[in-house]
Image 1 (cartoon, one colour):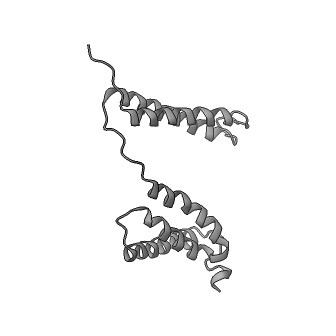
Image 2 (tube, one colour; image 1 turned 120 degrees about the vertical axis):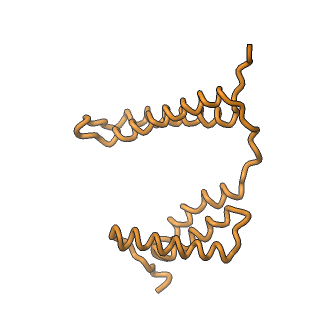
Image 3 (tube, one colour; image 1 turned 30 degrees about the vertical axis):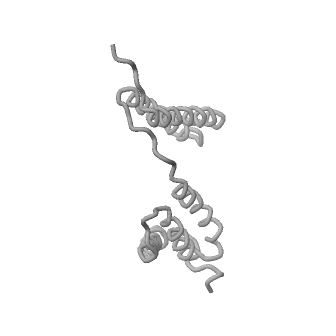
Length: 152
């Protein structure tokens, strides 16, 4: 008889998804759920947390069926640059405006990779800034300042 082996990384991920889904689902019950025809502010979070629990259960079952590789070292550099990027955007968007903030944020986030060169990061930041401005400012017409007071 074969012993039951778990892919530790996927089991941990599945357990985290299930725990997160249960916590957010419980919290969504404190808000008005509404009805099926008129969903309230707690309805969508409840449905999404249910999907998160379901996804976690699927990952957990898959973790029991296969034996995975051991987890490698944690990419602290990537986590630092990616997690600080929204903070940089939030702190600079009023002063630099949308264009400057997107450029600085994407330039900062691109250095999460060790392989990123300065010229590649600048090209990526310019491309993301042009695309984001075209979509959010011109395409969707969102009301924000393109050029902030710090750049005027």
